[in-house]
Image (cartoon, rainbow, N blue to C red; front, side, top):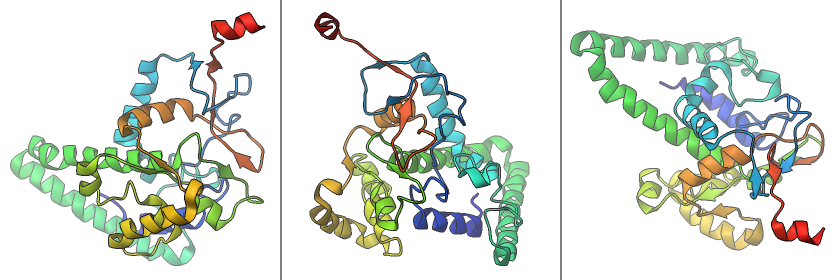
Length: 272
């Protein structure tokens, strides 16, 4: 259940404006003031020996919510979208997300979803809602999980900066994404979208079956500027959600921060 043209247009804008704080279309970091955390600490996300006010279970619960329902939330109200389009819907042809000339394509996408929804309702009536949930609903949530998890981890990390309009350019944005290893079985099942994402952003119109080959060449060319992480993706999902909470309200190059308090070791205390 994806509005084809609607997502086509916003995803295209994401590729054209990756990691631009003003114009990117998805997983745009919230600022400290937007989250109402002005009086809280502002600890860089790469500092991991810290104490959080919230219990680990709280962040785990939020991760589960994002992973299962983040995708429809993004489509319906543009959750994680840019400031100028917060609350905008991918289903409205008059949405600020789209240009006037795309109006009827958005309508066509909505009609396609209505037809699909009608078919699902028919099968629910004929074979029971439980059957449709089993064969469609649960797989749909699995797709949601991987779609949101993959894109979140590709664009959310302590080493990944976001840029103001003045400091951003296409190459800077395209290279600020992380390739990740999900294990060979998932890498194959996911068509390597998780470990060839840098190439996907640098050459977004390249056929996906050349992505692995292109990635090998990019690694050699980029050297230390190629971002890769082989941390277990489930651990990385929890860790990055917890540590990458916001960015500062101003600055040309912005890195993720959080409200945790760095731990002071006994050795450091003795030195003081």
